[in-house]
Length: 147
Length: 124
Image 1 (cartoon, rainbow over the protein chains, first blue to last red):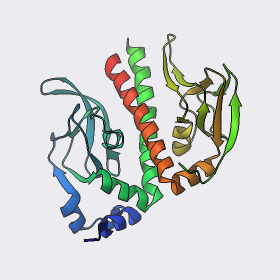
Image 2: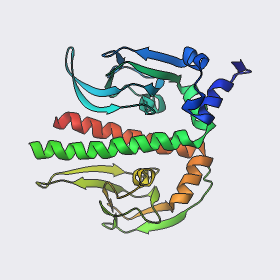
Image 3: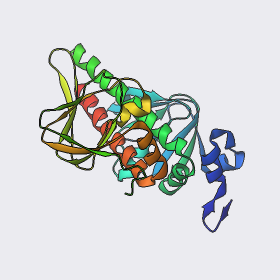
């Protein structure tokens, strides 16, 4: 539902969180991915941000045609794809649905509506990024130790 | 960018350790570099080290504030440097009250994560 460009359903979702996810909102912004579906491909230009509603997504690096190495995994409530949207750069990894996964797919503008609606989204995203950075630094340590 | 909370100016001399890995997050815990270069680094066994160079306009120290607990890296002034320091409360008010500050925080951390993922690929 929009009025003069304001998406009230999206703003309500942003303010109240996942409990405000309606069937209509999911019909407009949602996507259901079967297991093994490639959601984001490394190297592609990105203009969408994804919020995981249910299921699991793996962050991967392509080794060769049809073969991917899992770097990490993301679950419900986590956001991905934000990097390419913020700095208009190419996708840095390939993300694949590990299970049947429901996502909200948001344009840069819609992502901005979500961020402005309630500070929880910024803190949630920052918290998720901090966790991924911490895990990444630990993973580098494991790779050094394995050499 | 109009900061809601102004923080306080802090000067670092070249070579000064700002914080170390495993330090508990304390006051003056998020920094916005206004001059000079800061290196964030993590040391591993066998003299291995991962370092990230930050310049004017960059934020550091916020990863641990949003996640709580100990510092993930060391932070050292590579040159004489100056930063604005924010307490946790000031940082949270700026994130909440100024979208451009919030986007800067997201951009900084996304950029660091991208770099880390690239290094993992190169090591793997």
